[in-house]
Length: 145
Length: 136
Image (cartoon, rainbow over all chains, first blue to last red; front, side):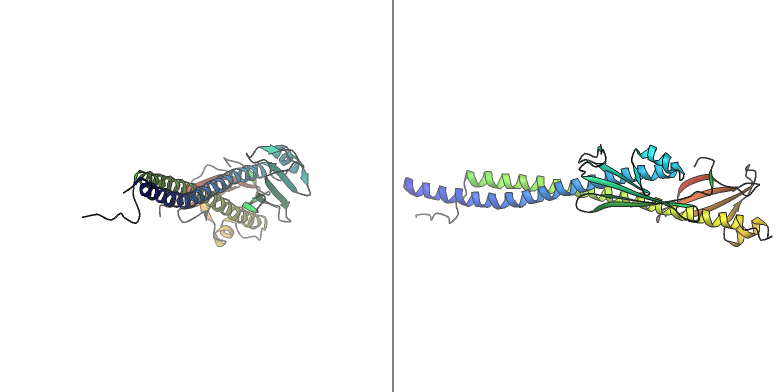
């Protein structure tokens, strides 16, 4: 076999492998990207649950006192709606800032003296997590609860 | 005899490519399974929190019901009215009044047990709240 024939076979092998590698790399990068996206979504869900739970406990602790709740949440109240804004790393942002995540708590006390709070956490794509809290305000909190 | 050259030649380049592709595939599958596990875990945690607050909301509804039974004095003794409504009354308690215990289910394995005290003046008071595993 002469030298030019060897070079030609080597070139064919090289090109075939380049093609194979490109296809495999495209598939693997897609899998990596999917894994990364899933990880980001689950991290956002975990943080949303933690923040919603934090607000839920504040609502319960305030026992219907909206001024106390405003102080606890450090957020302004507009018609029973509290809005908390967060950046991409879940740090609190001031009112009016461009937020990545937003938590809205709609607090209402009905005629039966039952406090209801509907808490929802959203990102730019939609709702991540919702939580509903009820607290009967006609009962005193004694004991350990 | 002269041996024919194979249609696809396999040399060092092919071996390196196959090894690299295998490495890429293994790491991508590991990455995907790790993120899937994280996703399942955070979904379960979110569901557990939602279930707990739902059970607590049911408990608060029952507390409202109990409070209305206590306040609607029809002449029947309180104990009888509570038992007729399906509430369990706790005995041997140091609380100066009536202690009512009720459960609300959280999920298949847990219940939320609430103890409520009814004082001498008919004042309803939350006494104790506990998550109990039913062991199923």
